[in-house]
Image 1 (tube, helix red, strand yellow):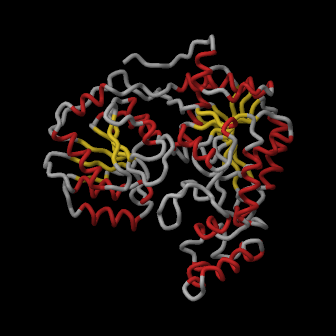
Image 2 (cartoon, one colour; image 1 turned 30 degrees about the vertical axis):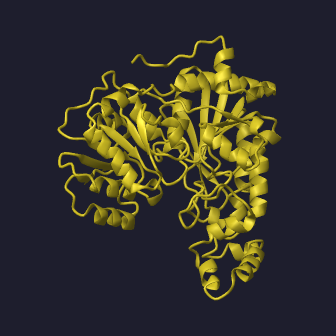
Length: 470
């Protein structure tokens, strides 16, 4: 089968969750004898042209085509993010040359949903895996401009105000005019591309209602829509998507990096770790505050991530740590070092303030039999089973997080019990076996593609392989 993946970015330049998942699927399918290709963005916010140019390379033998363009050069900058016609024309020509059997989209963030509509116009089957809330929220995270969580787009003005929350185009008139007057003025401006493409308004003001309609229409053209967690599916259903169109299908984890021996190194005190982006939405400050409360001289907190990307936030974390010698900022690590990093941690904390879906850091920690303490929120609360393989704390509550960490220190049997309760994460080969069946159904145009993963497993005569012996 010829499979073309479309995503936002791809290794080695980007290695976040979506990129890691797409890479794992592409490798497993290639190893299974299928022809695999990836199309993604290279740079999409730099250069003099909106028309894409391309570079090609291979990653582990997988051909990758990267599109380079500058979305800020579009005629209608705001709508370009929802229907990039220049990318659409390039993709049309590429599909006619590549002639894939299936198009699998794991992100429309950079290339826009035109990749879906173009593929369908050519009669190709399309599978979409939802990896965040991009189809609902231009911020991806359903976090409002003031940091509070959002249940989804209630009306265009609410989204417009959220996008412009910190921009002068909203804050300046709001300081002297009543909200209804500001709403009328900005709503009118948002439909005028010549205005919204000006500096200070790019990507902030735009026709939100039109964007929402185009994005929704494109997604519903997909033959199969997959969500890694029931929570993510429910959020889309709450926001008007037909429940029968979205199927829960958990991510598979490529465990090629996992050592045979997952035994921990010895340590005198509890070793707490954080692995990920050093950003406010990830709640790293929450973790620092919680750990700083612990009266445990031998406990340590190691924070892995690029602390240079957001210098002001890093400075805040340094201030919160107050010179605590137990807290160490270790910087990022290479992907092939993750087993060794996890071997030297007793527990991993995921304290995100947004509705994380199915963070790969949780699956990777669990693969190394490392319990996770996570916010009781979104998909995190679905993949961490409280008191069974990890602990859940009240979201955005440093005191409750500190209480959980204190329990791990004061209850000597708790950490071993949680470690013993960890189930191996779903293997990438199980994921691929299910996908191949869904690909076939999509090609045949059958509605069987709406069945759940659990039903598919029960129906299939094929043996799903990949589970490790524990």
